[in-house]
Image 1 (spheres, rainbow, N blue to C red):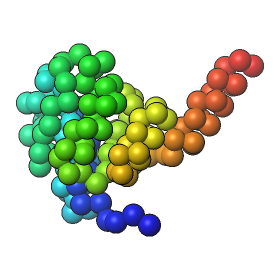
Image 2: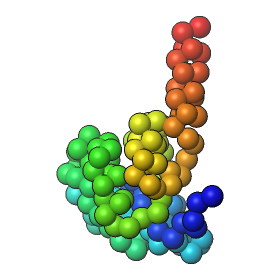
Image 3: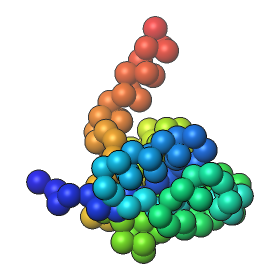
Length: 126
């Protein structure tokens, strides 16, 4: 059983990040927004307890950089990573990297993500 989550790292932007910050606050958790350089002045950034820049404005070099996101989450002392939706939320490798770093992945297990992708591929092939 995991320890209670005290600090959640949010690996997303925009409205979804705002919603996660609000939910974290309601649950008594601190929120850390991991964002690109383009989003440091966003509403989510202003609402979060902390902001960590994970890379430049280009999503491939920030929001999609697994090593940068996991490293930032560890460095700020987060207990968990919430991927939001899109970006890395359906990436089994990301979920596994978060778990391997000793953090809680707020989402399905890497196995479930893999199964979901496999079923989608099979359904498209029909």
